[in-house]
Length: 400
Ligand SMILES: Cc1ncc(COP(=O)(O)O)c(C=O)c1O
Image (cartoon, rainbow, N blue to C red; front, side, top):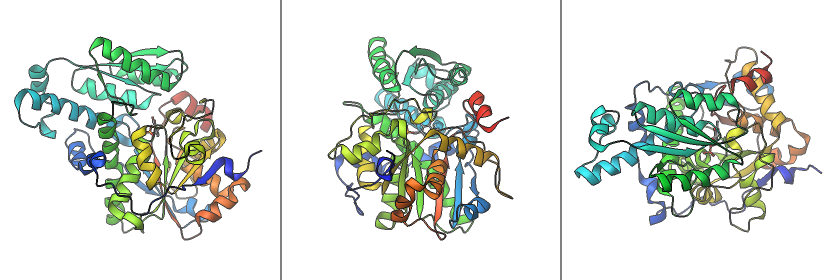
């Protein structure tokens, strides 16, 4: 039976003032991500769009959508993480060879490849992260090999090939791809750029997560400039947890116990963070779901340990939504209310709005909405993390 405890949990480990001053959190002191992204040609802050009419319809104060479908022309926020992690990886090699740091501005300089030689970057992906790794490698005129589940939508595979990435299809889940990518990279001397952490592999996922914090820095700046009231709630969709960890660390470090309520959103079919919070006894556990959600980017069955330690203390609540809410949210963005702006949003991109619509309209979640105190004064920040990255399914869902 569906009731709200299957779909929602407050975080029993919530800490208003987490102590992240120790060595294991030292990566959180890194602060040159926005400067790095600004140095990439084609950089522009993605739009922050106020959906006033939708806010009225859902009876909340304001809804802001940070629209990552415009990020660097590859239609998803993932370019922020992959590019920054590859910059850091190359920088480390440069420092080992030449003793000095590379500046962000020097990163895409052809001289760097001439002096450091060729690399093959390898990643596992449901689509967007792999495309981002291939996009960065292509810009550097380096190679990439990307592992994907064999049931991945054709257009997502094509998106990677367009960036000269070599695609390897694996008969299994995203998590199986992570293991195979690591094994083959060790055999072939490739550099793994994984967005999920695992034992002995923490540094690069940390840089990827840090890269995503640019979204939240930009959003703060945009809200200030537009004189918008700051958000009371931020909805963050979680796959391996990198994006949610970025939103959480940004808000915890900047606003501490005055931070907005942060809500993780996952598919019911793959809700490893919700299950971990409810039944993991303080530990991250794999999902029991089938991992067949249309929210492909969120079909990750095992929380990244790096994200887990940040979400466990910083996140307010965990929510799971069914695929029909993701489809409703895609259509809501595409066919906006009255004067609201149209937004192109893919399945995982729409997950934040799916969570908000579910909380505001689903009888099973009434109690959750009341516990959260979402009401007509609440200001809500959503991140549309992708556009129509699976163009065929997008057209089917919105009916065009
Ligand atoms: C569009 C989209 N949104 C959200 C996510 C979740 O990000 P993470 O895996 O860092 O939690 C992904 C991951 O691939 C994604 O592609």
